[in-house]
Length: 303
Image 1 (spheres, rainbow, N blue to C red):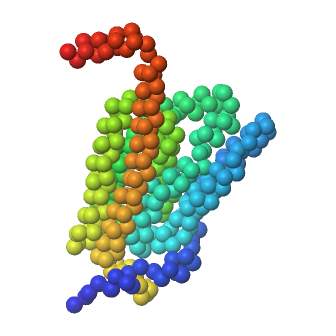
Image 2 (image 1 turned 135 degrees about the vertical axis):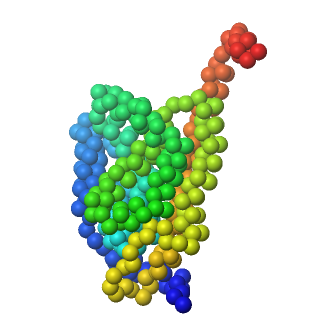
Image 3 (image 1 turned 90 degrees about the horizontal axis):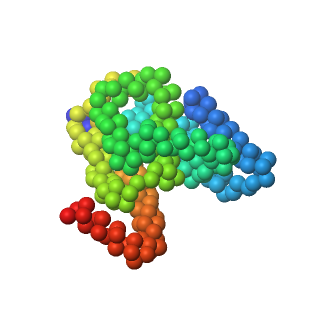
């Protein structure tokens, strides 16, 4: 019988996880460009006599770009070709976690402040554009992630793992898609009615179930779904079998997708509270006559 290795030996030792590195040229280009743009914005503010908090700069570089570098150059990037769970975990983190950490540095606010009045107008028009509003919808974000993760259930996943050009796509386009989903929500740039936000908030709970589907299917399936050939040559003692590798992939994918939904729900709740407070303040400022006219118009509309 060919039994799977014990689960305790199916993941690398902690020291191996920390010390395994490889160079990703696409990720290096992204890091240099992202750092240069942010520092350029900070310098532009300083030249005009304004101050940008050092705390936000530290968050952007240490947590945002730091997490991107660790994922791209570290164990997950180095072993993506060989390990299914490293490949899927890397993509899930680049899509969900890295953009959320980058948003802590408030790059949208920095861009609006550094570009001046004309730049603010361009930034606002970009944030209000139809593609950004689509990606910035919390429901779309979770559905998009679910559809994208379904690829892991097909042989396409094996092709992406072995194709060197897919490395450039993953390093560049995956975090970019995550930023398009996270930054508009975090910046509260998409304005909706309280009813729309309430519906969006409730549907986000349903989307949490959708996010779990790809991971659960990977975990519960007893056949190797990507049909990738076995790894040739000597492998470490902790290296998992193909099936257990797939199960680990499902475990990590499900965990990351579900945890990533929590901040989205919190942001939606905060946005709903702020809008409800603004609408309540507007109603309080109405006179008795204006409130009566508004009530009568509402009754005629729904009568």
